[in-house]
Image (cartoon, rainbow, N blue to C red; front, side):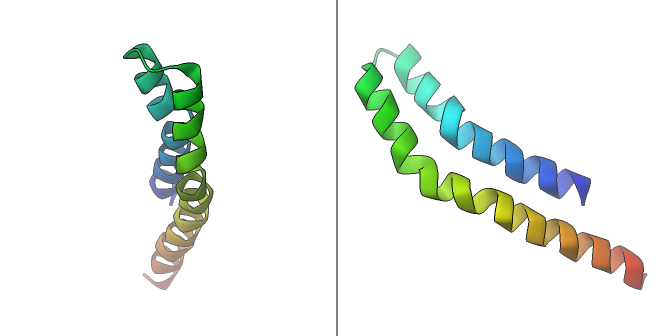
Length: 65
């Protein structure tokens, strides 16, 4: 369950911070990097919820076993 949550939060952080920083470091303008962050915001919002559901699934499997 912990790995699932950590992966989901890492994916969310990467989408909001990592990808725009990569594009900015490659020479894109600040506006372009901000636009990249805005485009990835919906996916970043869903990733933690998906991770939580996956963690609950793993925890329930552990209880069942």
